[in-house]
Image (cartoon, rainbow, N blue to C red; front, side, top):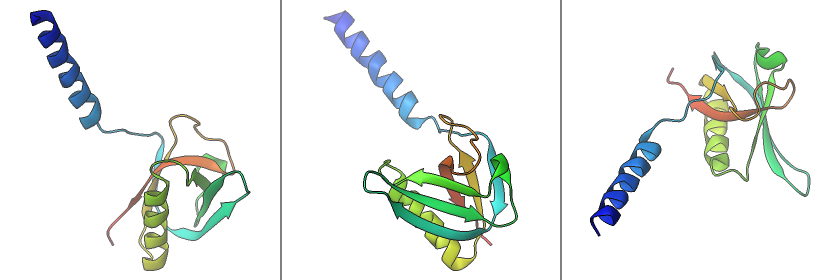
Length: 114
């Protein structure tokens, strides 16, 4: 019985540590200005293409993220906010895919204050 309580306590601590640890992606680029935001649905997948002004990170100025991901709607909202207000953003390349030229996947978009 005591072993079960100890294991349960350790599991709870491990869960809290995993949830509270910030996820970071590399590389991070910015600040950059967005030139356009395009939502695209090919029938099987919906994704967003964003184009940044005056930048060629990962040998491209066009990046993508999937709307089906949990963060997709939030990233779209951040992108549209930045485009509409002219605010600059930092973009983070996906840890999973890395740089792949045109359409490199993003993991996060941070809207910066003026």
